[in-house]
Image (cartoon, rainbow, N blue to C red; front, side):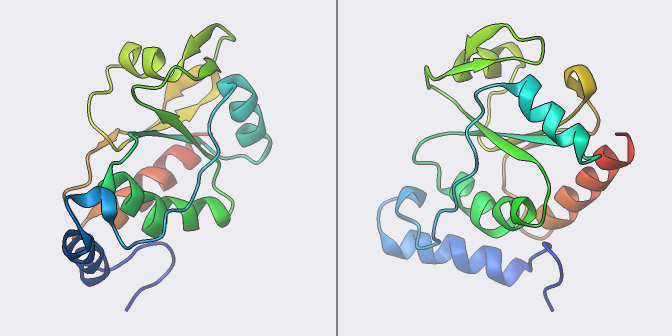
Length: 160
């Protein structure tokens, strides 16, 4: 049974298998992609999250990443729609972003500064850009992805 935003292994594996049958690699996944807001100002996004007494989740994504699409569609999109503040930063993208201190950078430079090397990676932030929960790197654990996301989201929100 699926409850809340925690989804079953069957759904995750079905999405991955369906994507593999759809074409070469996970970039052709049949799971519809749900867009998350692209970050332009992390200090502004954090202020909005703090006003709601929630942590800010930042997803590091990569164009064409099938696992990123699945994570957005099955987990992060529904979580965001339920009121959890989430923004996306894109690896290998020169889009401008202001960091938590208001300094201008690009999505790619900021992710490199944070040591992010794997897509998707989820980071859980509180005031001043302090990480409140352990990062989630990659998406290879369908049995536990939803549970880890729920646990870390609750942990981060409890520290706000």
